[in-house]
Image (cartoon, rainbow, N blue to C red; front, side):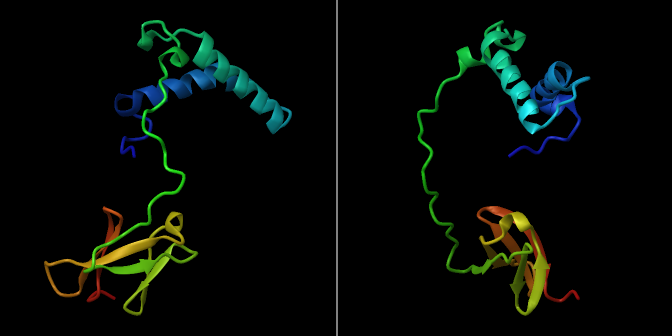
Length: 145
């Protein structure tokens, strides 16, 4: 997960440089008759970018020559999301909302169908944290309207 600021090359320089090359070499001044025509242009550029063109940042090697497949395999099925026994597990509904103690709270439609944990926070009664796995998404204060 990246928390860099958009349009700031000092924080995400390689992404900005990649997009600059893509724009200059494929998109600038181009018009495509349809998506298939655009895909052909992107595929050709990707071949040149990764296999033919040397990159200064790689000591003039190509990205394909430096690529190594990961030694770790990606699981075909991710393990089930589990929360602690002190947590109240709530499923996120179709609109990215959850319901807790008779109230609805908006989280994210990206979490639709996934479980989140609602966990009491020790600071004061009625204050809860909402977590997706180990990421705290928000706080809920039942004393607020």
